[in-house]
Length: 120
Image (cartoon, rainbow, N blue to C red):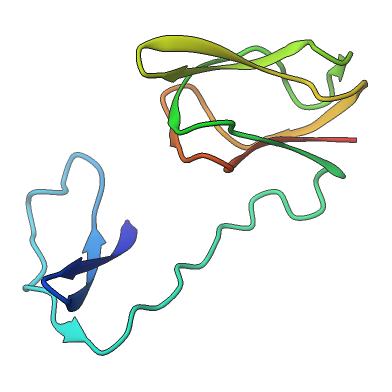
């Protein structure tokens, strides 16, 4: 399930969207308006995973993951392929090191600045 805050004509709605095969089977009642939007909590999947974060340079979709956790990489090695505006963009290692975590999978959509991987 994903939570979204949507503003329509100045009215703020808190909406929950269920994903998966049974998403259409049971629908929730209409969202009630609320006074102020709340900040969405970030997932802490890689807490303390690595000192160096590799962020998405632009919004897009992950086409493939070329590196795995524990793998040694050199500066400039390709870690991921990110598709944006029908172009394949290589996301490379910013420095020599070891991959601590890969925080995305092929097929994931990411926003600009999202943490894709961490390194030590």
